[in-house]
Length: 267
Length: 267
Picture (spheres, helix red, strand yellow):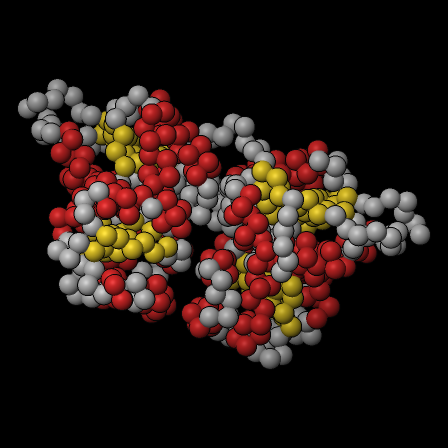
């Protein structure tokens, strides 16, 4: 036993997508307590500018630290891609983003050293994944898939329309110079819900890299051995309606969400 | 000539969708000058709660009045549906929403007195169109079509995927008791761009009612005869990146957008 008390981890996303990261954290690091913040009044971040995303993300990070977070997980690819350094230097607790862990797993998995990254427009335009992968000797092609988030939110995760859209987005990417790419990085927290469908769309040899799993794994390594006693507690905060957060969030968590508080961080 | 100076009309939307209304206003009321405000940092409103939408919309309306707007057009169906009365009473200039004009045109067009309204989740849940149509003796069925906005923003306005989605959404609505509905109200400012595609999807006898045209027509009637000299000026404001607004906006306006200013109304 190396720790005397349970660490408090603040997890932050523009909405409910980051719950895929929280779910993995609870699985891999059940010895911590969690605060989850969803900025549902201002989502999505994926199509917005660096300045706007940085401003929103910093206010969310500061809120979580004020609530007692000792570690911060930026469970939002767009916020990590566009503003990780600015968020990390705005708070006094250690921060972890979703991009470095995802790139690390892709690097372990890829033999051909070629990967495809799918993400929001903002994440792709920042080339944050391309840089993180290049640092590991992997060449990457990035593809924005703006229809995937609304399709997931519509609940069409196994729908023929979604499969058609996935083919339109991905067939042309796994082609030409990237016909032998063997890793697909899911660079948006909504995408893990499409994993079974994407498995059918991309070539069989491709490893699908889920940043949520990778990030939880990185946090487990960072925290080391923890007191195994007790159950994790989770407290949720949302900037838009609590009821809407609960309803949408349950699809991502797979279990009932209680204890959601409304927060107004704009005023 | 009944007016001695050009009226200044403030037009407001969560993003660029309201430009379909501005375009119609410029066509039908070219004797006015325009201020257009797109709340692009906080869009979309369609999936957000009444409280959040009302707060955002009132701050936008107040901004336009401060900039000199003498009339206000709420060119956003969700804001009109959820918060028209609150917006109208928060400002001291006359306000016009998109719902009453749309309902009026539907009433003129419908012989069977049955209409279908397609809109965002927020607009449908408010039943604002249903009430406005019921007041005119029309029975309405409302259907949220959350994928239409992202499909339009992806530029897929004549795409096979969009046509398939439209059939999935609409075939079951124009059925049963509503098999003889003869009006389709486009209750979201993005939808007029899908008019040619929707024309192929819904039965031939159905009149497609565009709230943008209806609203511009209502404003023209409200203002009466105006000084016909001079050219309309338009000044744009956006809460997210000016460059993004310009790029997305040009698709809706069909011409080059200049003179966009960035505004931060949160701080």
